[in-house]
Amino acid sequence: MPTYLYECPVHKELEIEHSINEELTECPRCLSENPEETPHKLKRLISGGTGFILSGSGWAKDRYS
View (cartoon, one colour):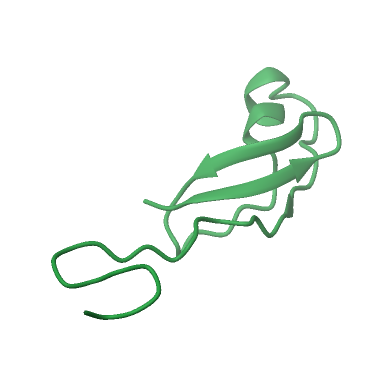
């Protein structure tokens, strides 16, 4: 499952692992800490991610050999 980066006004940045079809709008930490209160809204952030990596025989970083 992919990991996504979210921002909560209280908990700052959170890394949350969930399905690509799932859409989170409320902070899960706010829900678990104070179930009686209304949880804060999440804002999805764009992360840098990983670089483009090729592995296996015949591949090099800059060219195919």
